[in-house]
Length: 371
Image 1 (cartoon, rainbow, N blue to C red):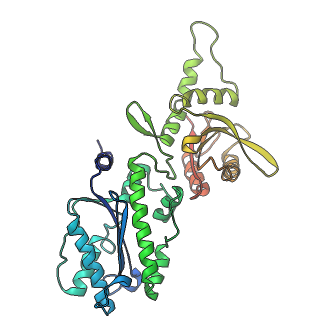
Image 2: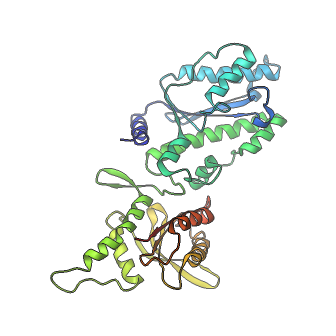
Image 3: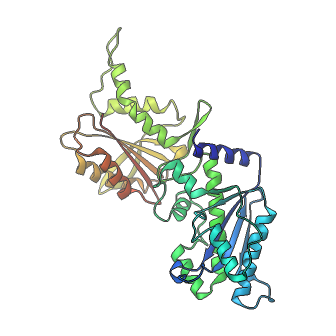
């Protein structure tokens, strides 16, 4: 078993047993301002998955006895290390806090810089980079750039207090500690909920819409549809050879839809045919298949002499414009069957189309079957 699957198994078991899992995040000074010192710390936040409580420590809530900015910052760091000590043995979830300029090492360096002392607690032994875990599970493009914000938007999480890294750096320079604290607390909550959705098999990414239970395992729904598309041609070949009675023939796109539906219902209880989507450019259109539980739309395309690379791309752009208004679809899968080799560079076209048409509101996965 690979490391990612093992980690997910451990975390799933920890959640089921209500073990202690805590997410942590912090806001700091812009790295562009820190050429001769470790980045200053504005606030730190924890979210406890057991109790669903969020704790935030900020310069804004330091006691009156802490009069200077230095004293207030040391107070924040002392509270951070006190939490680490009190939660020894917990799983600590974080977002990219494994870099020398940002993370547990950077916090230790800042504490030493301010106090001249070694931090009172070491980095937690059981720490999980949730961003790295998602990337290892679904690929580096699992969410749009600014992946913490992207994963939150894909999963309709509360973003009211969320601020981007750039905004936080500007707020740091203006001393807006309260707003920074609320943003940091929001991010610790998002990290915790992303992990919970991941282990429950419900997280939505640019390449995933949740998991299907099959043969005692949780199978990613999008991966399953893509694998099904890979088996369409072998199934066609098998059905076209029959020792008794007339073999089945696949002469047009309706025949192919008929076959694909039969394959889909093996795994999904509710597969709906040809759902109407809002009109676009004066015409009505339909989604070939809709799987409501996963908000999945599935579109089948078949290349021919008059439908090549540029045409497929243009059609998909129009499809996304139509489907983005369909509230039942948050992930569109486009299966392109190019058995006769009309497309010149299928792999490059897949990547280009996915990047060009995916958005935080609608993920798009394109798979071209050319052999």
